[in-house]
Amino acid sequence: MSGFLAVYRREMLSLWVTPLAWVLLFVFLLIQGLSFYSLVVHISKVAEQSLDSGPVQAYFGQSIFLIISLLLVCPALTMRVFAEERRSGTIESLLTAPVTAAGVVAGKYLAAFTTYVLIWAPTLLYILILRNTGQVDWAVVGSSYIGVAGVGAGYLAVGTLMSSLTRSQLMALVLTVLVQFGLFILGIGEYIFDPGPLHELSTHVSVLSQMDELSKGIVDLRRLIYDATLVILPLFLTMRVVDSWRFD
Amino acid sequence: MRHCRMIEVEHLTKDYGTVVAVRDVSFSVGRGEVVGFLGPNGAGKSTTLRIISGFLGMTAGRVRIDGKDILEQSLEARRSIGYMPEAAPLYTEMRVGEYLRFRAALKRVPRRERAKAVDRAMRLARVTDMVDTLILHLSKGYRQRVGLADALVSSPPLLILDEPTAGLDPNQIREVRKVVRELGESHTILLSTHILSEVETTCDRALVIDRGRLIAEGTIEELRAMRRADSARLVLRDPERRAVPLLEVVEGVFKAHANAPGPDGLVQVELTFRPEIAQPGDVLESALSVLVGAGIGVREATPTKPTLEEVFAALTRGEAAPAEAAEAKA
Image 1 (cartoon, rainbow over the protein chains, first blue to last red):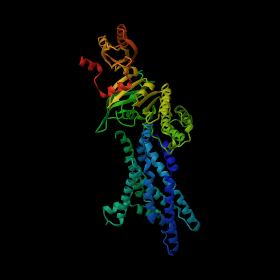
Image 2 (cartoon, rainbow over the protein chains, first blue to last red):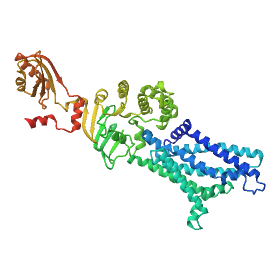
Image 3 (cartoon, rainbow over the protein chains, first blue to last red):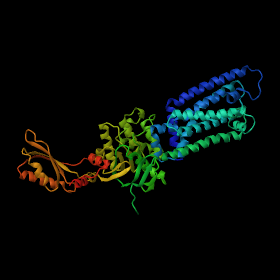
């Protein structure tokens, strides 16, 4: 893991001194704010409510805006990590320093993940606002954020891998969106396919069901293992790709 | 105990699939040497330096840095190297000081010594006045020197500089060469260039590479001696044009060629020595005494040593040495 801390700190600096993170933060919070506002307004008009359909559940579990904004934010956070280094040639200085592929990949990935968490952080205010007017089930809030972190972690790992496969940031972005969108569509298959192996698969990868379950406080280990797979496999492949540049 | 050389390259080959960039190159660089790696563009210089610095893998052969194999003990070997890639690519969104502190951390300079190491590197590469400037706003010359400061920041014993003066204006080139010469007093340096005068002014020794092969190796003097096609340019007062037949029979003279005399009776003569002659000066001396003995006025006599450019052009054309050409004609 040689080089991890230095790479992590540089990535954080470079993400936040350039406009990218701030633009993403702005767009993300705008979409989330509108989504949350309309949900609260909508739910406050509904007289009868079941226990598991408060605004928190609706916001994390039923809103398509959440998924859409992740489809945008995650690829944008990771598109430059390797593509830009290879386009500009800085990869040469980076890899001739005494660093390991694991250190570089982990540093870059965790910086993107930290930024992702920071972009989500202001949404905690929504929960605090709700608490002023009603009761908040903190366990549900906790499991919802676990879901958000899990989905994002996987998307960011896919994005990191895609960025290592091309010298073009745009291509990295497009490839990542394609993979994410593919998985998302496959997840929708849950509502389309007849019961059988294909239906099982769709249910397993469905982001919508994952968020739905977690927003109701159901923490299913299989979901988390799926998310972990979607982190570890792409990152492992990225390390192999970085090592393979030696033999271009 | 065997005292190992700083760089040992053995039978290095790099095959890009369709192109063989480096073919069976072997050389070594001793401690404290400043060696120029010379070749036209596309000769395989950058590829070789990238392999030596651990960025690229080789198809065959091995590279040892300070006794450590670049593949098997890669981290240890890389710690001994300060590498400046071609065109010194930098993160343009960082400030100079920020960037060098990052590079120092990456190269595992202990935390407490980092500030001092960065100051020292900036002083040596003369970029101290730009410490808070965004790299984006730096000129090419300054970027090149920030790249140099980066190579220096961990105080490595070996510096590998890929075309350190490429793309700079003459003042910047002079400045960078001066810095390299100063650094050569305390470091082993391997630098690549396609400019011969650069090797003449900064290096002790040169390696000449062309189309992936090492075609010559030696000190600057040795390289010059490789083309002992030495000749001399004479300016004579010789209105009757007697000089050429006289000169052609002097031992050691291969050819004499005279221009038409000018209105003032002065003739320019190009005198070519036989290539096997070890001391062209002796031949010139006897040629001049013959001319003076015959009553021909000698106004000028300039021995022309081939420039490195000529040596280089001849070596890279792969043409036969003039010695052989001469024999073939004779």
